Length: 131
Figure 1 (cartoon, rainbow, N blue to C red):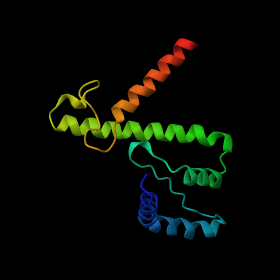
Figure 2: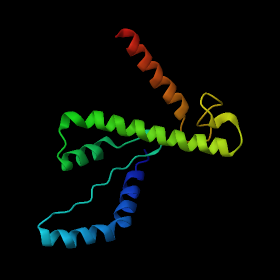
Figure 3: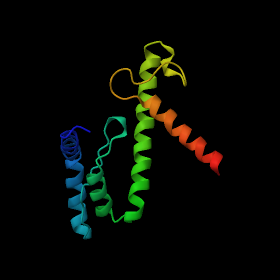
Figure 4: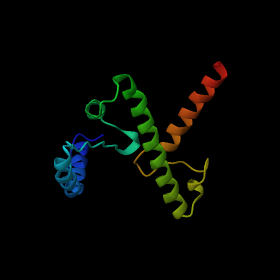
């Protein structure tokens, strides 16, 4: 992830939800609530800044033993969403790249999501054979 990407994305999220947060704080004070905005930033190719992620997990009171499995699921979801975007893009361009198994994904220079998915599927099939 670019060094300033997480900072920029956090600032955008804080600005985007500032009015909502102010409203929640105003209502919350009456009820005795404390409010805090926690921002999770996910970049291209499934990148997640581990230090920020762990800090957020701690702030949310999540058991430390659960942090890595949760982060891995988040990364997987980010990759799947980027894969959908790339498939849609290639389908709109009229090629076969938008279909499963057709063409090569990620030639735009952003990420080779299709290749990552293949590697992960191979690992899963190897695990299944060992079981």
